[in-house]
Amino acid sequence: MSSLQKWTISEPYISVSGSLLEGPFYDKSRNEFRFVDIWEQKLYSFDLTKGPTSLKTVDTSESIGVTANIANASEAQKDQIVAAAKYGFAFVNRNTGELSYIARPWDNPDKLHKMRFNDGAVDSRGRLWAGAMNDPKVQSPVNEGVLFRLDPDLKLNSMIEELTIPNGIGWNDTNDTMYLTDSPTGRIFAFDFDENTGEISNRRVHFDIGEPKEPDGFAIDVEGCIWSAIYGGGKIIRISPEGKVIGEILLPTRNITCPAFVGTELFITTAKDDTNDDQFPESIRYGGHLYRVDVAVQGQPRHEFRINP
Image (cartoon, rainbow, N blue to C red; front, side, top):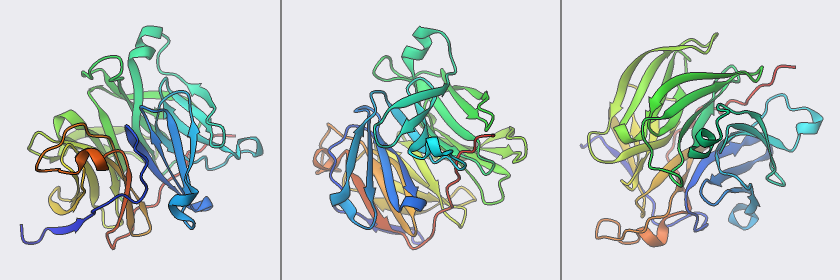
């Protein structure tokens, strides 16, 4: 495709040697960037001014899939962020990694054990959306995944069931369309979104990758394009609002998990890869690190979770 814009990254920005890096997040108020390692149960952060030498690591004792800032945090919550973790939604102390659960979707211990939360995002009204899936450390994922919505009154709502690996989630700039990835299907779905109520309807396919690769997490830019990480494909693809691929970022490793914008730069998390071949000759060496690239377009602002007083 002659109109396909391409970028190539040759080496990591920060070498972490992690297992499953995910949840990249730009904290503008602190000029800090953070991400997690789901399998190794770690929370990483660094000062964007100081760069890789300022990287800090905190053990979280349980897996975390995604984090968000708290918009109206009290003085007692100044060191806390909110997360979708192993057993549900929790406050996390960014300095100690201590988790304090605020909403668990299931009472059944067996159900809690075999599920864990994955990706998510906060909508324009401060509601935190996140998907739960079968924990691969317990069993292979099947269609028991569920998309949940945590409201500012801390009420938990089950929004979509029978997903497999619910992943990247986001909204268009007019907040009337929500996008959701279900990775094993190869599809990103679109829904009509009611910004006032948080309800969704009219599920439809926005993008189908059409090959045995899995779209993972994504970020959305100010032009309404989705930058989707392709797990197993060694790339990020830029998808237009019409659902067409108009750009790609090539990386030196196979398992790309999620991008996040910092200005016009995309910071990209990856997972380790135990398979080496001619297509990705450096895949083992370069998996499980953090990458960055300037793509000359700004990302959508990230919203913060709100708590009703």
